[in-house]
Length: 200
Image 1: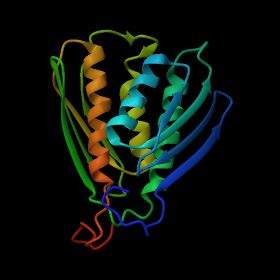
Image 2 (image 1 turned 135 degrees about the vertical axis):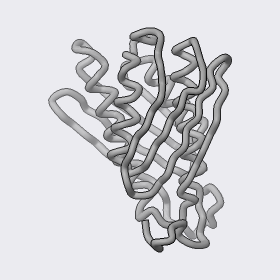
Image 3 (image 1 turned 90 degrees about the vertical axis):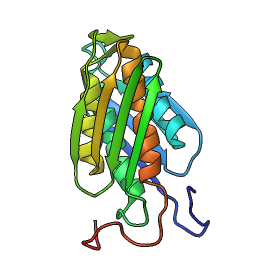
C-alpha cells in the first residue's frame, strides 16, 4: 500500500452496473496491481490505462455498450461506475492525504490536474479540442467522463489545459495528470484528518 502498513484494510471497490444501454464491471485497487481495460472504444481504453498506470492502481474495466448509437452511454456509464468504486475504495475519507496535484507535459501540451478528496463533489475543466473525435472516441465525452467520476466519487476535480495543439496529446495529458494527482490524494496519511472541521 502507498505509505501504509500491512495491517490496514484493503482499499478496493467493485461494481457491476447493468442498464438497457450498457453492461459494466469494474474492480479497483488503490494500492496497485495489474490493469485490463476493454470498453470497445480503443482510444478510451488507452486513456483508462493512463489512469491505472500513472496512478499505480489495479484496475479492471469490462464494458459493453450500445456503440452502434455512439460512444456517449458507454463512456459516461464507465465514469459513473468508476466514480462509485473509487468512493467505495476511499471509504470514509480518513487516513488519506486528501489533496493531489500533477502538472504533465505531453509533447507540446501542458495540463494541470488538482484533486481534493473531500467527500464533496465538484468539477471544473478548462480545455479545448481541435477535432470532434480521436480514434473512435468523441472528444466532448472527455468532460462528461470526468464529471461522472467526480459526482459519483464525491471528489473535487480541477483540470486546466495550459497549452496544446494536438487533441490526442491534450486528452492524454488530462488522463495522465488525473491519475498522478489521484495517486497523491489517496495516499495513506495516518496522522490527522486534514480539515479544521475534524471530519470530511
